[in-house]
Amino acid sequence: MSFDKKHSWIVTILSVLYPIVSYFLIGFKAEQLFLVALVNFLFYVSGVTRRVITGFSIFIIYWILFDYMKAIPNYLYHSVDILPIYNLDKKLFGINYQDHLLSLNEYLHIKQSSFLDVMAGIFYLTWVPVPMLFALYLFFTQREQFFCFSLTFLLVNIMGFIIYYLHPAAPPWYIQQYGTVFNPLTLGNTAGLGRFDAYFGVEIFKSIYAKSSNVFAAMPSLHSSYPLLVLFYGIKNKLKYINILFAIIMLGIWFSAVYTSHHYFLDVFAGIICAFSGITVFHYLLKTQIMKNLIRHLMKVTQ
Image (tube, rainbow, N blue to C red; front, side, top):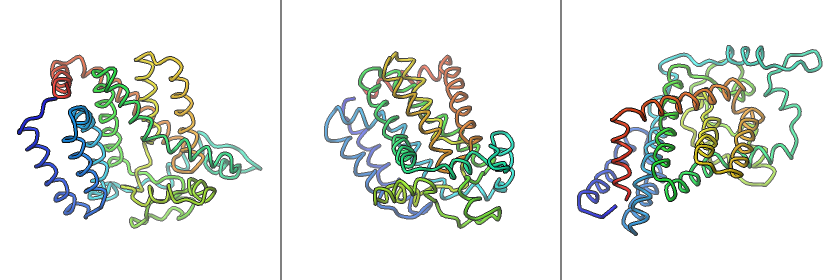
């Protein structure tokens, strides 16, 4: 991607507009200035980094959309599913334990251990680095596949965001801590991941979930969608033994989502369906001339 004044002006205008729009929508945050500084640094420092940040702008769009969900809470449009999803999950996947029917979350809460706490935390910490590192690998080795993966990732997230607004759902930890009464002022919660923080004496997950965009967006579990997308494109690109690692991470995240009470198994299942749906829809769109032209254009601007 060669440098020219047109690209420079686009970056400058967006760098000014983003903090201003963010300020009026969700208020000022230091992360906004960090993102602007990072984008500008990578854009101007070299040709290689300019191509990388241009390609990864797809992921930046995802992040901004996710962050802006704070401005328009989904519970303003539909009532939050608190008790029905709990009862349905327990009915479909519950476990009889000492003459009581428990949800998988409740059963795993009883069976918690330090080993599982640590493993769950480790698996959950991979949900951002693994997709990003995989995307970086594709960017430098299979540029067209990079854009296919990135656009599928964006599409799956948009599908998930739409469902969040059509069906707001409380996570398991909400009913465990607050019961069935809806409280719109509820803040993000580390839930079972707090035990990882406590074990190591850190506040990694506390800092992450304090910035949660929407507490009532448990279904689908997009945490469960991402590793499936990585595994699908890993298999598609014949990464062989590395796909075994991707599969282990995927299963680990699915288990950890339920173990830490961040998601019901129903949420995880919905995340899996969302991922497969996004993959199917994207590959259908990939046959259209519009999508072919878009991929071709993206390839051109990152050359």
